[in-house]
Length: 223
Image 1 (cartoon, rainbow, N blue to C red):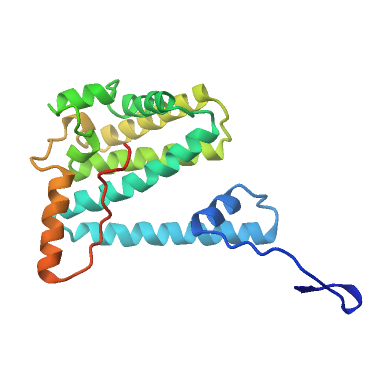
Image 2 (cartoon, rainbow, N blue to C red):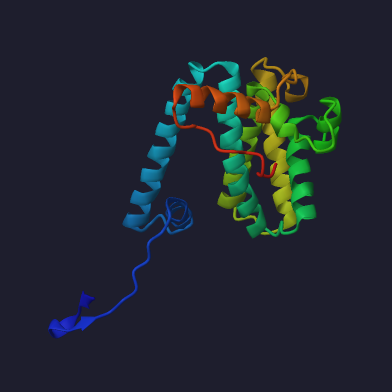
């Protein structure tokens, strides 16, 4: 109930939003409104703080745990990327497969998902993201986060537009790796163990130490 004029009261609906819903509302609202500007500043600050925290945490982790952590982050960001792409008209599973191939093609110098799959000599049921080292995963995480942000910020509303933006994002990240003298994603070595194997080993270790798991189960998540 809220107070109205002359002491009367009126019932209104209250809405409780998830953090992600708040983020989407604030990022797509009018920044000229003080409350929106405040919200955008808050999320920008929190995002950067989390990035710095993640960088510090990753620096002290062994390779296997870095792979688990980045793979988990990539899975979450791919969900956000899929939601943003859907708003641009990438609706069906075939649409999204094509959309993903544009991103891979840009980052991997023309290679699509099936080409990367073949280079890694994987079985049909195995996912390429589960057989990447931390460096390759990090490049794909950057591709996913940047593509989602660019499509959303530019207000792209067509499948072709989303595909081209994903391709351009991948190409620019590839150029950045090249300028820095880094190893191209397709030249990164394929780890001997899959993410699923690492998860099982990590779970056994945590059970021995009686600690809660820091990593979600990724088996059912999409690439």
